Length: 297
Image (cartoon, rainbow, N blue to C red):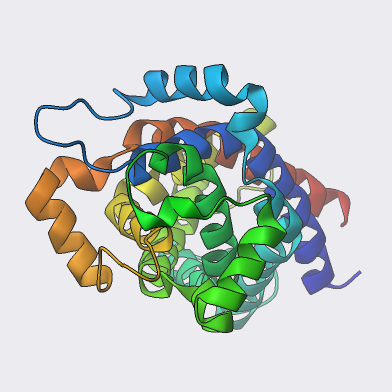
């Protein structure tokens, strides 16, 4: 079994583990990010993460926390396969000779390259996911965007293709997606390697136990979101914005509008659930990836 096939297989299993562990947190994050700004003197729809959880469970049940999972689940194989396979191929290009571990700085370069590749899969997938997750948060906001009620992932894709500029509409938010995935994955893989080497006491990390791999993966995931979270907020508000009567003209305008109306705090809406998700989800992802990759030889 070739290295690419091994990375594809291990990445698929790792991504599935990440998705199952982290999707409910992601749903709450998107609900908080996409809720409309309250009118003067009025409270926001959700007072915070726990209030969003309570309202979601009351209105939609447990299934509400997993809304929108169909799109990323359908593409998780492709997304994580590309991420880990591109990273693996870049490792091979940068490695001085077979078997030599890469430095932390080399892993940062590999992560950035993998981030470019996965952005083209992440953008349309997350547009569909965000539309489904944000429906209840946008309900009652009075915007035209909520006139469209989606039955599921395919319904979102069909609507966008027919009514929002064809295939181009599925790539709405591509700029902030790139701005998130490239530096985010550079930090993710760089921090993962740094922590593994620190725990192992050197560059040879092959003997690290599962607990150490989970610790390194979880903290590396937290570094991803700590670095790029505002770009994720911009991506989410653009992707749920009304196509016919847009509130934002682009990424920079969305950033400035949020900053002007809500301050820096507005760029960190949903940050708590995102960080709460990142640690267990990435711990599961890296552990399953490493175990699967190792079992394949």
